[in-house]
Image 1 (tube, rainbow, N blue to C red):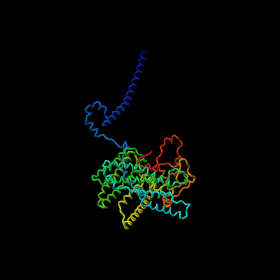
Image 2 (image 1 turned 180 degrees about the vertical axis):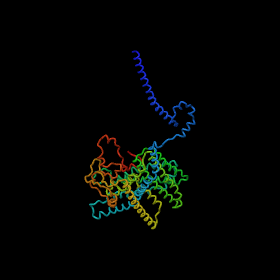
Image 3 (image 1 turned 60 degrees about the horizontal axis):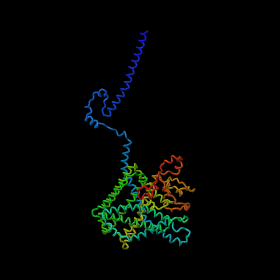
Image 4 (image 1 turned 135 degrees about the vertical axis):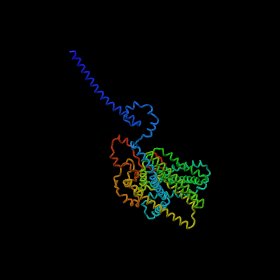
Length: 563
C-alpha cells in the first residue's frame, strides 16, 4: 500500500517536472526574439549592422567605443528627405513664390501706373472740354425755352466745380514764390531736410485721406436732389473748403518737390542718399508685421500711388533744373544717373518688401492677379449706364491718388518755366494739347480692353451686370429688380454702355445713397448662397466674416488697415 502511494507521488512530480521543462523552452523562445530585436535596434542606431551580437556583446571592451569609430559613424550615416516630403515641398514652393513676386508685382504696378496716368491726363485734356460743354449748355438752354428740363446734369455740375477749383487755386499759386522757397530750404542742414521730407510724406498721406472726403462731400451737396431734407451747411462753404484743401495740398507737394530738387543739386549728394535710404526703412516697418490679403491690397495701392507721384516729382525737378541751365540738353544727362538711381531704389524696395511679406504670411503670387481684376472692375463699372462716379474719382478713392493738386502744381511749374511768345509757340502748344488728347484716348482704349479681359478671367461679369442693391440696410430690394445672366454680355453690352449717358433712377430719389456695384467680390457669397446657409446660430456665430476687396477705398490711403 505504501509502495503504491509513493509511486503515485513520484509519477506526479515527474509529470510536473516535464511540464516545467516544456514551458522553459517556450518562454526562452519568446524572450530571445525580444532580446535579439532590442540588440538589433541598439546596434542599428549606433551604425553597426551585425546580427551575431549576442556573443560579441560579452566580448566587447572599451576599445570599441573609440573616437575613430564615432567619426566613421558620423561620416557614413545617412538620412532620407523623402520621409518629410510635405515640408520640403512647401519650402520649395516658397522659393518659387518669391521668384514670381517681381513679375506679378510689376504687372500690377504697370497696370496701376497707367490707371493713374489716365486719371491724371483727364484733368488736362477732357476736363476742360467737359467744362466748356457744360457752360455752353448752361448759357444756351434757357434761351431755347426748355425751362422744364434740368440745366446741368449731376456729372456736369461736378465738372464745373472742378474747373472753378482749378482756376481759383491756379490764381492763388501765383502768389507763391518758388525761388524763395528753394533758397529757404537750401539753407537748412541735411538732418533738418531729412526730417522735413519725412514729415512731408506723412502730411501728404493725411491730406489725401481727408481730401477726397471733402471733394465727395462737395459733389454730393451740389447734386443732392431737392426732395431730400437739408442736412448740410450749404454748397458755398463746401466749395471754399475744397479750394482751401487743393491749394494747401499743392503747396505741400511743391515743398516736397523743392526738397528733392535741393537733394539733386547738393554737391556731395549726401541728402539724396539719405532720402533714398529712407525707402529701406520702410521695409523694416512693414515686413515683420502680419498681413492678410486685404492689407496687402491696401499696401499695393499705396505703392502704386507713391510710385506715380515720385515720377511726377522727378519730372518737376528736371523741368526746374533745365530752366536754370537754359534748356541745355547736356545737363539732362547729368541728372539722368540720379533719376535712374531713385527709380531703381524705389522698385527694389517694393520688390523686396512684397516678396518677404508674401513669404512670412503664406500668400501666393496669384493674389496680385486678383488685385488687378479689382482695379479693372472699377474701370469697367465706371463705364456702365448706372455708374455712380467718374473714373478719376474712383481711382482717388481706391488708391488715394487725387490728381487735382498734383496737376495744379505741374501747370504752375510748366507755365513759369516755359515762355510762350509768338504765333509759332501758340501752334506748338495747340499741337502738344492735341497730342495729350490722343495719348489719353489711346490709353483709355487699351486700358478698357485689358480691364474687360481681366474681369472676364476673374469671372466677375455677373457682378458687373447685376442691378444695384437697394439703398439702406433695412430695406428690401425693389420689385422691379432684373437679374441678368452675363454669358457673353460683356462683349455685347459694353460698347452700348460706354457710349450712352447714365440713366438716373427715379425710384431712389427719396432714399439714401445707393450702394455701388463694386461692393462685391469673388470671395463674397451671393444672396442665393446666403439663403442656403444653415440657420443654426451656433454655426453662424463661429463663422469668420469675409472681407471684400472691392469695399476698400479710402482706407487704402496710408497703406494700413483701419478697423
